[in-house]
Image 1 (cartoon, rainbow, N blue to C red):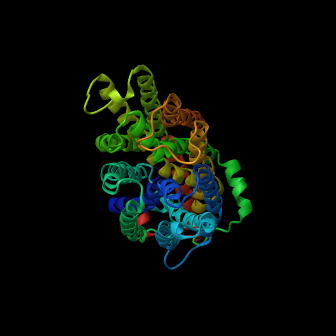
Image 2 (image 1 turned 90 degrees about the vertical axis):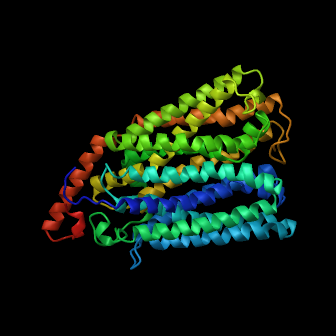
Image 3 (image 1 turned 135 degrees about the horizontal axis):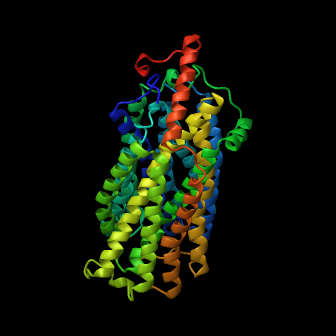
Length: 492
């Protein structure tokens, strides 16, 4: 890569900015339990809430291009990204308080429309903040060797949120409150709101130095864009197309696995020990972090694409072995810490490895979006990170939104039309096979599609080095003509 116009951030800036994603992931993890609130406390039916959540997720996707358009048009004294990070988090905070504390007190005929309206507002706040996580990658750093560092921090934080969060819910909150009741949600919401607010403030501080026009591509003014520009970008940006396919199917797998119903079915019913989901999550944390740090180190040498592909293969292999294990073991309940045999050891090893590789692929995607944005700048000269990031999010959400509907419809096929399975639900053959299909079968299918898409994704390490070099050459020409200026610290 050319040594001119290299934009690098301090390590602490990258580390703290990753907390913006952590803040929204906290809310995503919290809202993963919304089905239990909606059906168990607010009184909505299983199929109804599944359809509502899918429809609102689709709405979430449609808001992305609009918000991306607004971000690309924005350039305030407070920056391009920071206003949306703060506004988004405020909306998330308020809507969570209202949704979980007001809905169930309303007359029955008002519950569903009120739930839908507040949830839609919540989604707008979520999109404001998450769009900045993707788009602002381009101003953090353009160094292909430094860009993967975001994944290291993001993976660490996400491990704590999703794995630590499952431990917190399964081993502490549920036993303390006796299930998914109002006391459970009050304590859960309070902690999530406090932490997400702190994380957002730290992320805003971290990007303050870089959230300036001098770092916005080739231009010192906001790029003129319109909604008609979206389709040409999608049509010509083949790497973006392939990343969307790979990441969205990967996301669908993760969304299904992280849905609170799946641990209940797998651990609570199939294995007969719901608390084991928290215990195994605790054991998963260290291997996940180790594999992530190894993966980030590998990505800095061999590129993000290469790392994504190898991690996806690791997840496919681990989950395929889990499927074989469940079809060969005579009694799934024998997989227990009180009965540590070959089956228990195999389950722990394959499950932990599968979760670790899945975590790595999910965290590698965000800096890959920045690569596709730089590719767009390289071929057109336009700096439109908001458009690129939200195009990605729009289609990604369209596909991953199917998770809740898939789970709801599949469960309704085996008799769960009004309530979701709970830990005391008797295990039947239908429930056994459905659990395996949802927990292992669908993820494997999603990962195989990801691998096929990556065959057509050209942005490996060598291609990205070439792109950054050519962008630097164009910048040099524009500087010499006096058409743009760059920060002194960016010229090395």
